[in-house]
Image (cartoon, rainbow, N blue to C red; front, top):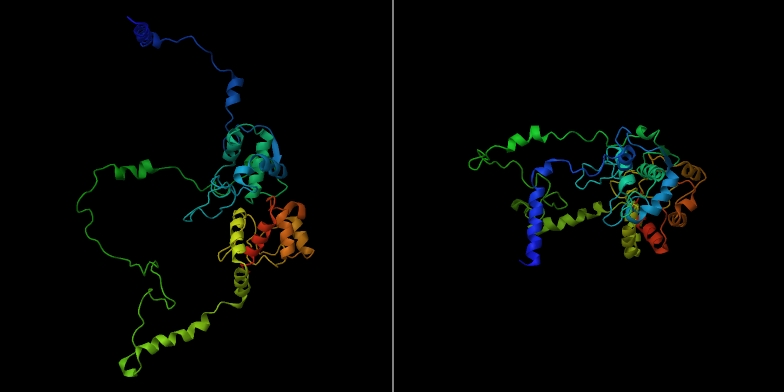
Length: 368
């Protein structure tokens, strides 16, 4: 018998012995884990605060730590980079076709935020964040979502006082009781519906394109009555006379002019503005979010958007007469914290002058 066969035979014999009654007995290896060893692994934090380590951290410190350890993936102000998730904004979007699920819009418990940061972040260097740093980052994320002020400090003592906006947005999964029984029987294969009735048409559902008169696109104009003695072509010729009434309002003219002057710069500004879109909205349906909506921002008095709660430094600047001229905006966008100490905007600033100019050009296309 070769050495290889002898080795295989010996291995088989050993496995057969292990598979016998001896496996039912304890092997006598190892020992119970000590309490301190269990504690080293058990770092979970529960919604009621159980498991929170002693510590604290403020928004300002969190901004610095976030910039150092988190911003390379999540952006300077939690807006997300490439496929890395956005962590701020999205409030009120959960019913949208494409909801923005962030800490401020979707996560139900602050303990999940802290636990995930403390346990798993930063990516590739998990558990290198101290307890105080985890508190600070969590405080910064609360601030980035407009849930606390810029002077807020989070600690194990006030942690449970914070309630996230979507805390009541979850409910128990009751599908086992309410749905599974419906689909567990024999499926219907023939004559399942008595009859088919058309109840809606595309025009009724507002999915068919229409012309300016509200008629389905492509509908031919009606012929003039024969007794009028007018050819049908005159009916079509009369329609253009109503065109002047559809002219754009005068207030929109400057925006059109700016876009016409340098459309490439406006297009570049739209791309750069993606860094800002997590906090600021523009367009017809723009509303205040983490930051104020920016329609009409160029040339507008600072701190003047109705319904938005500005920081004290911004309020003071507004009282002093600050207006967002292109020059003032350029300085602010390049270095928000340097331009206005204590500003709520946590964005570090646009480092390239061409990006600053492009964003201002883009914002100029949105009227007040």
